Image (tube, rainbow, N blue to C red; front, side, top):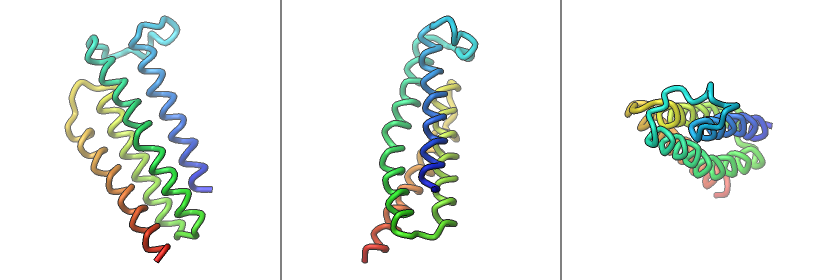
Length: 128
């Protein structure tokens, strides 16, 4: 249930990041979503925000599903899921909507790594 909820939330965030990329490519019906457009750099950053989510979300979701399936404590699952959403929002906003924000970028990356590490260790301990 937790993995289902998180997958749906991440899918919505992916659609938002995708809409931002489309808007920055000057598609007229999403023109309102191209605010903070500072040229080619904005488009490249938005593409990286989208790509980065696509790179890290699948492994996290697989780990989360395995942990949930193996009976990990729901509080731990909700904690890591919430931290992962916060991390991906931080990173996505920093890259997709802003020119430069090292706090959001680095903070989002570190939280993402921490969440993946927590679930990896939890799953390993569960097997042993």
